[in-house]
Length: 82
Image 1 (cartoon, rainbow, N blue to C red):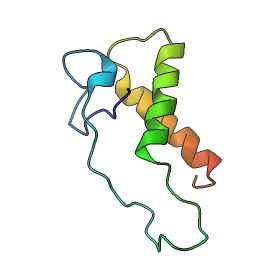
Image 2: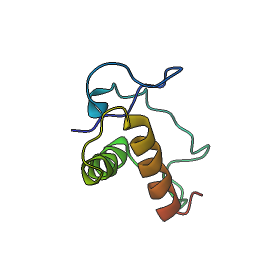
Image 3: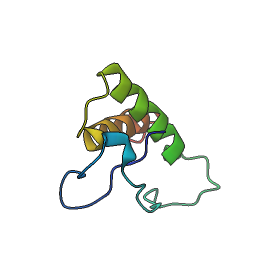
Image 4: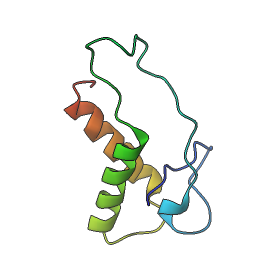
């Protein structure tokens, strides 16, 4: 399972990329969750796409942050949030 990289000041240290810790859930939608607006991609959806990207690139170490950000941006664009 691919986990979100930590939100520290630099790249995750030690171990392989997908072993980083999940960040705390943040509500960045700024609105009512019951409305018809697009919703933020879930942590699970981002993790699934990030893991697929990581595997497609040959499972390189030290790239968890980049894969997570790319997956999150892709899903936000698909949801019409960017």
